[in-house]
Length: 80
Image (tube, rainbow, N blue to C red):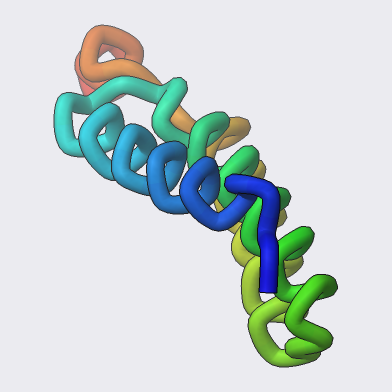
């Protein structure tokens, strides 16, 4: 089956997101959302409902993480 490179884009954006989040970079969540979109597209090609649903809901969890992100400087100011 030909995935037109979408599966490779899903892998790449997922690894970039983990790298960025490991470096405390909020944009890692955006890459994770893009990765979930690619995984959902792959799941539709495979007709895999569970893979689609898992990534659909993971996209919303990543959006939540992005919206709730606070930098260290903001957290320090709030605790003072």
